[in-house]
Length: 568
Image (cartoon, rainbow, N blue to C red; front, side, top):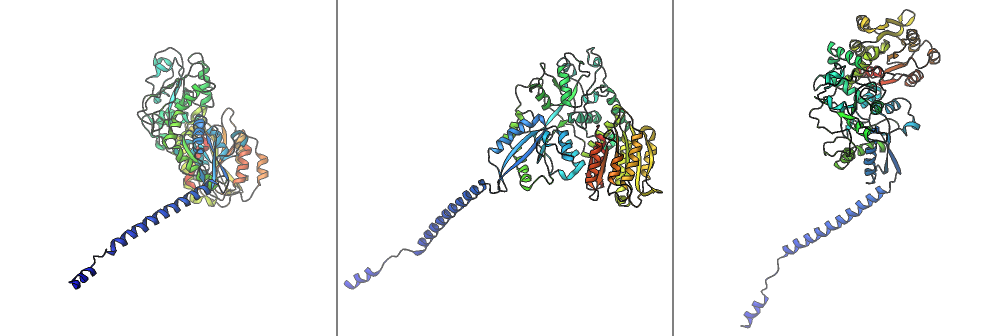
C-alpha cells in the first residue's frame, strides 16, 4: 500500500512554458514601445527647442501689397508671426509695406527707391495678375513661382449717388456707344467714362476687355486684329473726357468731391469693389459715398495674386518663407481676415460692415480674362487709339545672331502694325554693312500707321540678317531722326530689339552725348544672355525708357506689347 502512495506522490501536473514566454514578450514589447516613445518625445522636444533657438538668427520676409489690401495683409502677417515661424533655422518676421503696383513694377525692373517704397520686397501682392504678367514680360527671372490668388474683387462702375440708380441696366459693351445721359432718362448732358491709363490701372484694363469681349470672353489676338475691335477701341477712346485722371484713386476723389452729376468732368469710372470700399471708408472718405454699380453681364474680376519674387536679393530662407506665408494666407482663418478687409473669398461670405456705397451684389458670371500676351497687346492697342496714339520708331537688329529669332520678331512687329488703330510707326534695321558703309537703314519713315500699314508690312516681311552689329552708331542715327520728327502733345519713343552687343562704330559715351533728355525715351527688348544689360540700362534710364529682358524670341511679342502700352 505504501508503495502505491509513494508512486502517486511523485506524479505532478506542471505549468506549460509557452504562455509564460508570450507574456514575457508582450511585457518586453510594451516596455520597448514606452522607451521608444519617451526617447522620440525627448528628441522631438529637443529638435523643437533647437529650432526655436533660431541657430541662423532672424530673417525678415518683406511683402509689398497694393494699398487696398495692405492693411489686411499686415493683419495676416501678424497672425503668422504669432505662430513663431522658423524656416531653415531662421526666426521669420514679416514686414508689410503699402505701395502702388506701378511703382513696385518700375522699382523691380529699374532702380529700387527704398526711401519711397521701403526695402526691396521678397513677395508682392498687386491687385491683378496683369502686373505679374508685365513683370514677366520685362524680366521673367524676377518671378519666383506661379502667382496664387488670395482673394478677388469684381470691377464696378463708381457713380455719384444720384446717377447710380439709373444705371441698373448698364452693360460694359455700352461704354463705346453711350454718350448722353438721356439714354438712361435724365437730361444731365454728356455721359463719359473716365478711363485712367489701363497700363497702370487694373480696373480700366479689365473694363476695356469687357467692352471688347461682347460676352464672357476671352479677348484674343484674333479679336484685336478684327475691324470690329478697332472700331470699338476708336469709339471708346473718343468718348473719354479730355482730362482723365492718371489714377483710379484720383478719379474717385474727383467724383466724390463733385456736388452734382458730371461736375468732375466725367460721369463714372471703373473701380474694383475693394478699392471703392476703401475710398468710401478711409481717412479721406467723401461726405456722400460713391455708389458701386455692377453692370449686367459677365463681370471682370481682379484676382489679387501673391507673387513670390526671385533674384539676387532673395535668399533661400526668404524664398521658403515667402512660400510658407502664401500657404498660410489661403487658410480659412486668414481668408476671413481678408474678407473683412473687402476681398471676396470662397471659404466665407463675410463682408465688412458698415460699407457705404457697396452692396456686395452677387456675381453670377465672371469674364474670362485674356491671356498674358493678349493683355499686353490690348494695352498697346489702347495706347495707339487714345488721344491720337503714340509716335513709335522701331530699330530692329538684323545681325547674324538674330537669324534663328527673326521670324518671331517679324511676327511681333507685324501684329503690332496690324492692331494699331491710330498713331505713327516707323521701322529701321541695323547691322554692320546693312546699307553700304552705314550700319543702319531707314526702311519706312515714321508716319501715320493708317497710311503706312502696307509699306510697314512689306518692310517687316523683307527683314534679313547681315554680319555685324554696331548698335550704338545705328541708335545714334535713328534717335536723331526720331528727335527731328518729334510730334508735340503725343508720346514719342524709340524701341530697339536686339540680342547682341555693339561691336564697332561709336562707343557708349559718344552715343550718350547725342541723346537729348527724357522727352524721347529709348526702350530695349533684349533677347538672350549676350546683351550688355548694364549699358542698355544706362541708355534707357538716361532717356526715361526701359529694358525688357526675355530669355528667347518667344517673349518678344509680350515684351513689345508691354513697352508700347506705357503712356509716359
